[in-house]
Length: 190
Image (cartoon, rainbow, N blue to C red; front, side, top):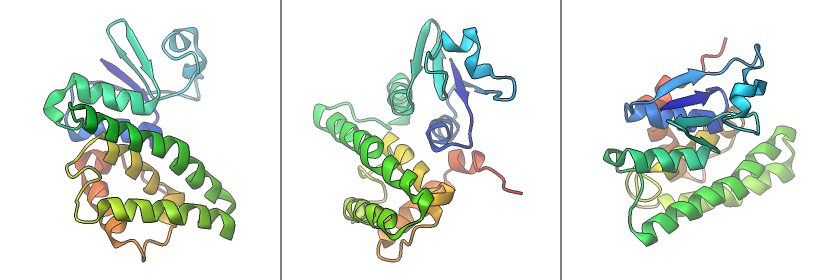
């Protein structure tokens, strides 16, 4: 099994952090953008979008970071990072869709730094704060949801948010950041 990745982005980092946290038997392959590896015929056969992360498992090819996370958690059940019951899986799906449909656009909009953009993120932080009340992790125990969402709050834009009204979120991001997978994927800034 091989993971094609570029650690600096949150979608790549969350998958690589998951692999490293659980010491999964996955070959991590950092792609070379300088060599245009993701535009090569060989890579486009893995992911026709020409993007990372991407995963190969024998002749199976998978792209999209949340799909890769859930596949890995299914393939390696010893991680205990993905519920097996219908309600638990639906809860995971809800949060992964929420991350993709609501959190990513809101964090991405922070690039302009306007009050309107920051105001878009505030209700999302309140939702996370409520979910984390009385819990160390989003679903109670460490899961793919924690990796998927926290990676965005650890970005440069995410670190600039004011978490003073969300102490549960701040503590959770700190816990996630201290996990060995996230420590191992921390990009060293000059």
